[in-house]
Amino acid sequence: MDFFSKMDPALQTYWYIAIPVSLIFIIQAIMTFVGLDSGDGLEADFDGDMDGGDEAFQLFSFRNLVNFLLGLSWGGISFYKLIENKLVLGLVAFAIGAAFLIVFFLIMRQLKKLEEDNTFTVQMALDRTGDVYLKIPAEKSGSGIIQVSVQGSVREIKAVTEGEEIPSGAMIRVIAILSQDLVVVEKL
Image 1 (cartoon, helix red, strand yellow):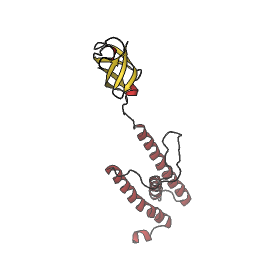
Image 2 (cartoon, rainbow, N blue to C red):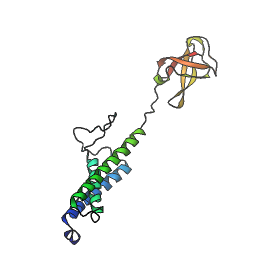
Image 3 (tube, rainbow, N blue to C red):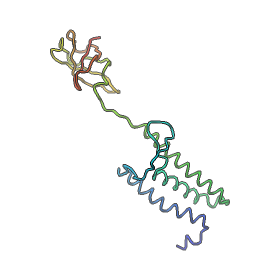
Image 4 (cartoon, one colour):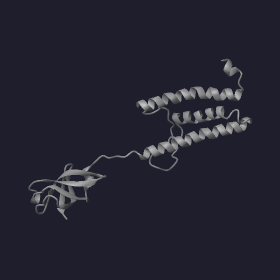
């Protein structure tokens, strides 16, 4: 404790903020890597939607408070000997804390762009063209299989036709959906 008692009160304040906030940050990081960070449980009743997108950025959350205080405290400690004016030091430390928030926001925004829903539904195949894989018997007397490209991958779907038989390799268009695993096609 002799270490803290000889310090200037401003530097003591930065250290008193830095130590617990750093411990909380380390615990949050470990929980994130282990997969236990489903929510911090401490959220405001409102959000700070910063970019008008579909997902709101929670400006007032416990995690953001920790990030801001981490930047503020370590910024104040780092620049304490370089900046003698305590007001300027406080403004620089505040700016570093705000920069931590902005960087965290930008990282989270980029990570959100990586999310993609690749759930396939047969409705996505409607009005798409494809190829007949197994011939389709005439006038719904049986079913064949078609291959249709949806969301960058080829899907195989059972198909029937209302017209004449469609041989393997023929180009088709999906014109109707009968069920989750059966479509109606026409020859192109």
